[in-house]
Image (cartoon, rainbow, N blue to C red; front, top):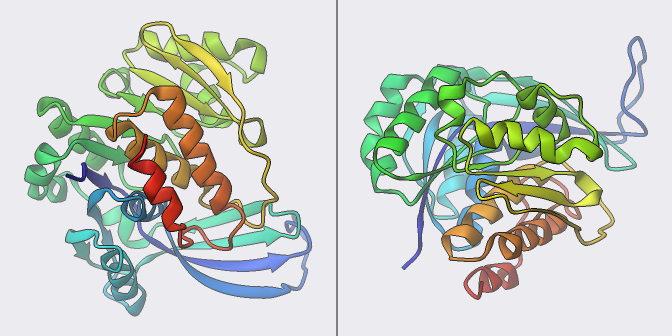
Length: 302
């Protein structure tokens, strides 16, 4: 039986402009191509988890515009339960510059994502309580995220937070998190220690001492580093892929890691699997590419 993941988070439409290099202040350059993709960190995570075989429900908000309806249809195409998605205002958008070296720069308009309230989360309390894992990011208002965490914590639903985009989080919130997946910038913000690979363990230990169960730091091409509550730690390399578009790589990593952990994989095995999925995603354009069925098969063999 598939494990149940409930994603509480953001849904966007990504307007991607391919450019020779990321635009600098005062500079005007001409785009070489333009694409429209589905995005939003929450939606990216949900689509990854659903494609890898998880039973996924989504709590969030889109606009009453055409983009909003398209985004809902997109999620439903992967059998994501959209019962708890509200439609109000305008759908969030991300304006993305994608350079020829696959680096990106993102301008985010939250739109309907900022309409998600604790009251809406309460409407979805039943699905949160019945799920095996709550998967979160920080592209919706913090009060809604805090409410979702409180409901999950009270019902022993595992809590997985990708703390992006970076912002301060209370100790009360952190002590309820089972899995935290910051990148270098987010780790520095949350720990209060300037990022340096030589003090990774020190920065992670600060978060562990605040109550986080496991910190997994994503290090881009260098792989990842993990530190657990019982003192396990280590570096794990990632496969070298030739990136085409790094948008959504962290979201794919989080979605795949959640699926692997719920399938019973050991932590290192789960991280390797998530890195492989994210590595595939960066070889494709857009934040929600179709993931080959072989990855879904592997998810059930972990």
